[in-house]
Image 1 (cartoon, rainbow, N blue to C red):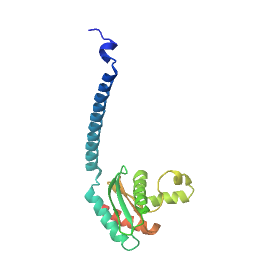
Image 2 (image 1 turned 30 degrees about the vertical axis):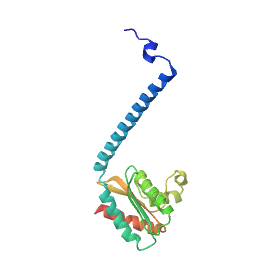
Image 3 (image 1 turned 90 degrees about the vertical axis):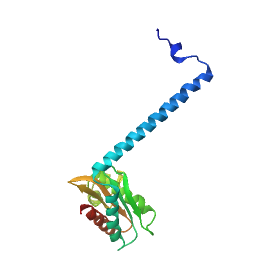
Image 4 (image 1 turned 180 degrees about the vertical axis):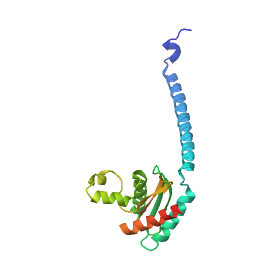
Length: 177
């Protein structure tokens, strides 16, 4: 059979042109669903290999909250090594912005594989470019390591820098247990 444009396109009747769009929409939707399922399967398999599951993240947060109760109310976030939130808690009375700041500190510690306190010291020591990097370089973010590899991080906001750091260290210590 000889291939022709007319055979491939069918008629060019305007009412027929909507049919390929519906099929295309159906195919695009099916492809989106397949990709979403594949992404979720990848995320689930990655979660099991990172060493940081929800139960562990909640253990870290619980230890951090015990320390946080010694000072002002705080927000505590635990993220995995990609920066995705695994668990979080905002204590009653914590100021609203503390949640976003705590999450950003955790994401920063996970991305740089070091504490945000180290990054703050670097910024104060002349590495001012860190300040415009989009990351939060204030104390209170600590990476969580398993067998020497960063598997996530904890981020805390609500107190001053020393309080945030102490709360984050308490949470990180629970991960090491």
